[in-house]
Image (tube, rainbow, N blue to C red; front, side, top):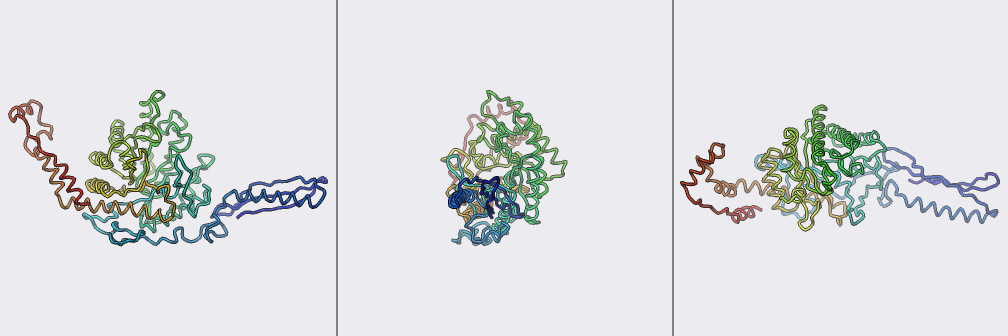
Length: 521
């Protein structure tokens, strides 16, 4: 709500017009944002001249007032109360999403995801453990390097105030409730704005987190939280790998606080994504020193986790490039080698993002299996990239074949708990309806549920497993057992090679494997 005060007074035989412009901002409190008070000296002796100047000045004020967004947009049809707080539902046209089966034509329903249905001895919801990513769903604007934002959600007021942060949080929990999802993920700076100092920033975060704690109740909790250590200019050289000691210390303080609020909210995991932990050129980089620093940073994080009694899993998310040319956690194998070298395998697991795996030159299935066979698969960021676009597009996973391979790894892993599937995915730039937020998540959830059903079908059928077992059957012999037990030396193997002569090599039956796989889709 805007406030305008206009007046005229005389001072030393001169007339002054004055105008004061202000606005109430915020939702839970009533504050006046003072934009300014302006005076114009009037030298005209005639009243007509005075009136003309006043009209011109009022036109200028009208332009200023309309150039600044109000707390509640003007086209809401009564959605905002007198105090500026949002009233009613954020998604009034969307019901609670229900399972209606594969024959349903209702876009706001699940066709394959039936939360309570038991698959291979476990409920679907427990295999999948879905989570909504706050940053894409509620902070995504559709902007890209070549274009301005395209998404203007009705509840947004154009500010990044504490009041607006709280309103987004309320929208988040209504979204989760209607979607039937009981987990969410967040970056600290996405849910609360920066302050002028670190102390003020922490205070802002505490205020928003207190509301989140109230709104989530006993049924909802974060799948994981994390610190946003890549967007601010201070992190242009990295955070834990920055060449500046002050940045390293600031990053540590930020992670400390983010870990505390994740613990306070009952978070099940905490993620490290080193968005700028890497280099642009080795000409000005001491790689060994930076890797050592990153290891010390993670050691300190693991120690602080124990100090505050946080029982969640610490996760590292590999990514090969973008925004830096080369990031140190390039893929699952590289990250595992880093953890192994610095003795951190017992403290961390991996958060595999499918789009990151493909950017590193692997399939998502490859990185999942790499993490799984090392006992390090902790969580999955469920998204995909466009094969014709060589950067991180963060699309919702809708390829049923890929989802089936993902779920094969999850089933072999015995599930993901305390991890899950986080939809680190965003609407396309051209999708601008509020309804699209639901449709995208429904589609992603249905795709993974369908993948789960297909993977279970393959496992129960057994044909694919039999094909693989038969392929390696030559090792199911006495000599094979000795080799796998490390008891066959080169002399023994040479003797057998001499005895057997040229070995016969069987077909890999790849086409048959693909046929069996496709038959389950």
